[in-house]
Image 1 (cartoon, each protein chain N blue to C red):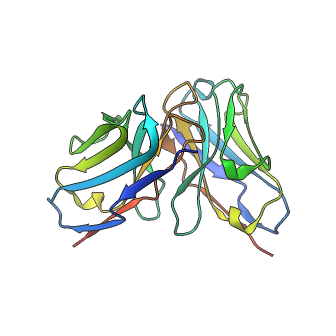
Image 2: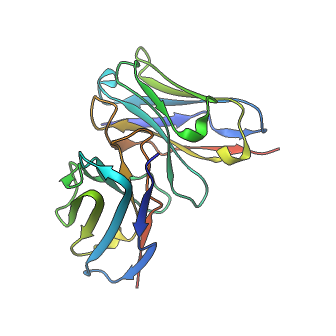
Image 3: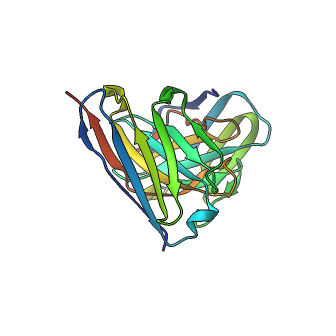
Length: 121
Length: 108
């Protein structure tokens, strides 16, 4: 069955970096767009970044402002999110999600359970 | 960035009743690239509807999506106990793909 398992969350100081990983299984990783979506405590959903099936097309939420990088490793069936210059406003649960379509335009049909990132001094 | 607004913020209904959630976009989504998700407390969201009216695999028939342009609606014809949750619309026509603020369906 389709599985997405996030890891790498934790407590980090403002200005520091963190790399999130999303290990996938149960589907052909190279055939799907992948997304990161976050949810601050008690708040709604916010698109962070997405990468097309072949890694050639990416987009980022406006708030990212060059601080985050999404990438994927087909050999490991794993999605990554490198986050730099973190601020307290980045505190959230970060979900990894699979795109419904091959093309980057599309909703997310399968989600991981999320990993909590807390930015605090 | 396209802004989505949802109404109402919260509604309180009984099992078996009909729920209607509205989603309005700040500009027209000509290809009806709207999706709806349900998020139960403490869980990840799950996709219900995409393309404004297409049910995702496994979505029960009581979930009905409609609308076009800037105005979209999710209807739940008869609420089941598992439907008391938060519902989000999302547009994926223009990057970044934005979400609405959510509508909570609570138990009366």
